[in-house]
Image (cartoon, rainbow, N blue to C red):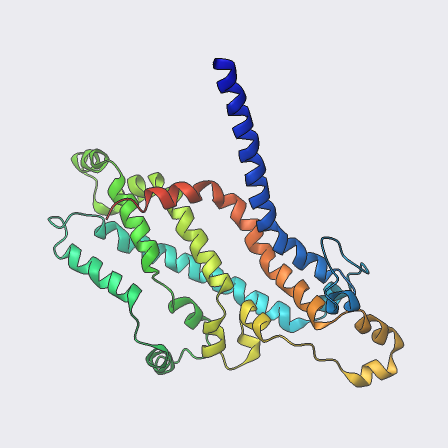
Length: 296
């Protein structure tokens, strides 16, 4: 009986591993396909002939990107947006969540404040009032409009509030007995114990700021101020026909790339920073989501 149970357990583990491997392959496949298209020839990409391997292997699309100053300018705008936005969001989220993690007896109208936050998550004033507000503050074509417009993600606040409320009350009581104040308790007790949820909201902020394109499209009038995703959303190839006619080598190089291959190369490069950051924060991700969503 024990041997049969062990055999069934092994079969189950093998099936589970194969299933997870299949799911992982399905997740990686779009990234891999984008890379293969970016490395393929113009004809193969345009004809939809690219599969798991590149056809007409070349790196001409990446060479073109290296010459595209607008791409790197938008890349730098996105880097600044992520650094400023994630930092500001982290600070504001923690400072908002800490008092809201207290009971209604400790913080008067705590429940009312939570409902106000939830209301803002479900309803908004609309795009036109937001644009008028941004314009009134003189933030059009300013990097800060990309940062401040999403400075307090309510979903992240709720995650942190719930995580703080799950921490043992005895730790805070012991700190209060020792004479610690609210700031000391927050930075010396709560934050060190909350790395999973803090890493989770940081990842959410980084991915959100990096991938969001609509704010740049609405609030930026100059293409030089576009963040990377807005640039990619708007991107087109502009070929100088005079150079093509006078330079056979340029004609040959441009004949080997297309909008599809060049855009695939830009998309892959745009994904690369997130692919680098995610593995370092992933180990905290599941724990932060689980513990930050079980208590109201």
